[in-house]
Length: 237
Image (cartoon, rainbow, N blue to C red):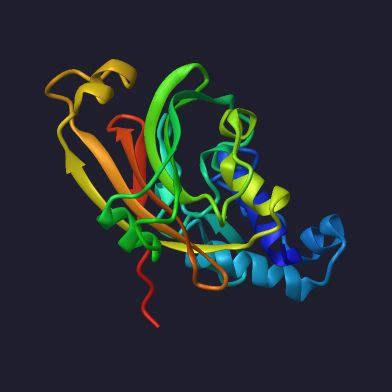
């Protein structure tokens, strides 16, 4: 991971954990460059990332400030371009997984189409409940080609699959295509997310792809409505 991305991830984490006061400027570029042992230009590039995400804004002559509307108490604030995964998004909090389904099967035609494979290529079919601080937050149903994401096991499923893909397999996750929709709770939502029959559920349909353009994941994540906010930042250039 490039140095500027490491710095932007760390500053993003500090913002979310309240380490920096929203009423004061964050440390200036010279101070951050000294702290992270890099050039001022590297720090500037890292801050540019957070400005483009709508987390920071620059005020000429005064410094760089946190956008207060981007800080939401009690909810997970997910940027539209976030590809870190839940474990990395919520560093500092207790994220655990309960495995509901873990099997290998031949994919239905729609799954094969989204993963750019044929229906004779086996895929992992995973359903996991993700808990945050022992409270249910999201149910993930995921399909991954077994010939691309090799070696998945229960140990990996109980931690971060994205970290395994990046650090264990040495692959680079480049991004995702997403559809976000409101849905009614199904049986699994009511059983595992503790949703009432009339609670809305936020469903995220996603195709994740590697830096070579190959899809590695087709998933449906169903989020409790009271725990997540998805944020889109539009920038006029």
